[in-house]
Image 1: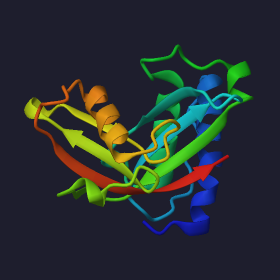
Image 2 (image 1 turned 90 degrees about the vertical axis):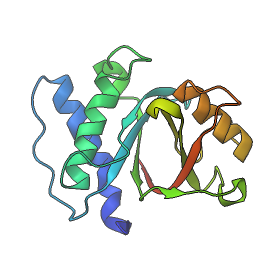
Image 3 (image 1 turned 30 degrees about the horizontal axis):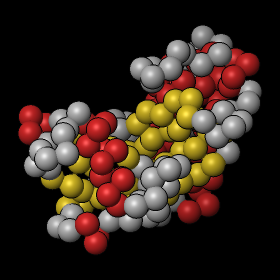
Amino acid sequence: MGLGVRGAGLTGVAREAIGAWLDGREPEPAPPLGLEAAVFVTLRDQAGNLRGCIGSLAPVTPDVAAETQRSAVLAASRDPRFPPLTRSEFLQLEVEVSVLGQPEAVVSAAELNPKVYGVLVRGAGGRRGVLLPEVPGVEDVATQVRVARQKAGLGPDEPIEVQRFGVEKYLG
């Protein structure tokens, strides 16, 4: 990945995109950062409760800045767990941008760490579940895999393929 200090501006990119969506306009194109990467944008209220989270496992746009804009608007408007965001909520939200590294196959649970790696589980028929690292309440590998299985609608005994991915996380 390697965005380093350049990635710190991604939360501002996300906020501007959500603000534009709330105003009913297209966001200004974000200056490209020269990296193609998948992004998840997570929105949390002042108490730290989830208010929206959407992203992709593979980039949909050619640059991480445009990918951040896309995911931010979707997190605010299309997360099926929540109604669309309101302006009053937006003003009080914490925005987290997670830039994903390439998924890599995992052979054993020893290769996982819910504080360091996100996890992708894939079952029969292509069903898959994703869990980012550092999710509150997910303290161990067994919980991380169990929650990802649940998100995919996979039972505890169904065979799965597991991949992990690193994340560069930015808060703002």
